[in-house]
Length: 149
Image 1 (cartoon, rainbow, N blue to C red):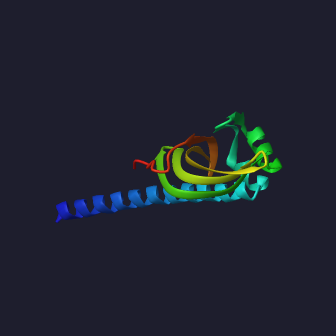
Image 2: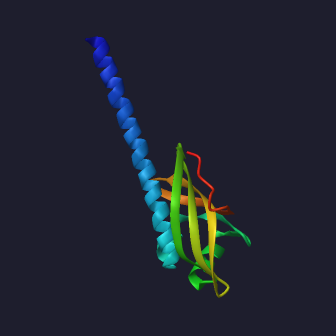
Image 3: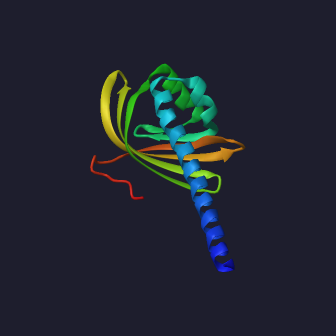
């Protein structure tokens, strides 16, 4: 009987641990999806607390700081009109989350609409009860590219 009780207890602990991981992954996925909408809406008020002040943003045309990324979004010099997220993979290690989104991005760049396939890598760090984005990197890929999970 003690053996069954021990197995049952271990099962409950592993199930609750798995649920906690799933909850954290769901939380970070929601943040990532919200971020795409906030970028499309040019909602600097919501993006500013999400982006860590020391974050870096890597695009096809350069790498810049949080302040520059917010300026680009606010002025619309790059308008992230729509990110069609095809697939997402998330890994959380301690207080760090890495999100890979395979997207088709429709953006207005220098006055012209462009549609590009990307795998976007996002790195978040948990600070207190908030997740802060540390890095956002766009990697141009073929539309057949798949995320390995």
